[in-house]
Image 1 (tube, rainbow, N blue to C red):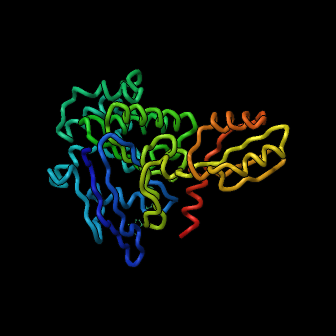
Image 2: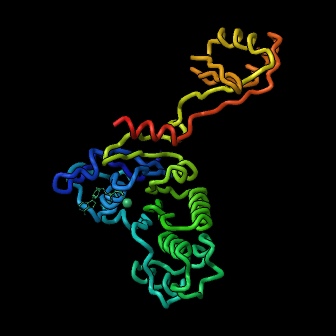
Image 3: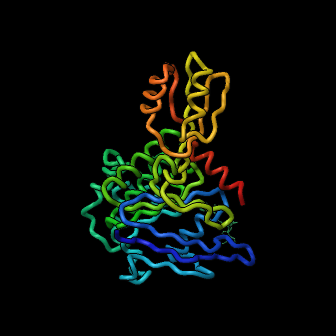
Length: 298
Ligand code: ADP
Ligand code: MG
């Protein structure tokens, strides 16, 4: 697998305050990474360092497996780390033409990228007539003009209304499906859960978790079940090797699992023991539960 970015022990010290504290992670091609953490946890500082706008106090990073200088690497990256800023009275297309001139890249892709962010029909509208969501989408189109290998976004949905948020998330997912690697910073758990395949959880500059989003949620979950004959069901559940604990509540039993288990097997086994289940479902701990557990533990 191709490594797009490797960060090794990056640290940023602002006169005694460790904004980023010994952070290491790798970004592999084709995935969507989230840096997740509350405000002030060091997300923007981390992005600033790898984009060469903040000097690291310690540590290093390497773009594209060291095949290019950090300066040249920037030409292969699309990044939006500030609020979108374009010329207010110029149209979307005029603004993008200007970006192409400044970056010395071809204008051929302008319409294609406006289509990606669903702004093609508004290409001649002046920037100052755009909603915040549309401005953000134009910024994404602008960052895509050079067909970057990775798109970096800092809090891409901040300040947007629910429809604007939805639209940006759909666009991010669409861009990811087309093969572009994405790194986004967000303080929103559900954003990371919905959009990202991998997550780096930061708190006060330190990494609390780094890995696939679904492995952060690597508990086996709790099976909820019930039957008319609760005594038999309790006897049955107590004897099962996958049950760490069996708890009876008003609405039935909750069984904490120590392994993954096929629910249809539980159903069939219960039936063999003359127990007819009228409730059977698996509930996993949400990323939010895991996140709160992680952030409380330091
Ligand atoms: P996040 O993006 O996760 O909200 P930041 O990376 O912006 O966090 O900030 C991390 C910490 O570093 C915060 O405590 C912030 O106040 C501090 N910080 C950020 N930039 C500077 C700066 N230029 N000078 C001093 N402190 C800073
Ligand atoms: Mg920030």
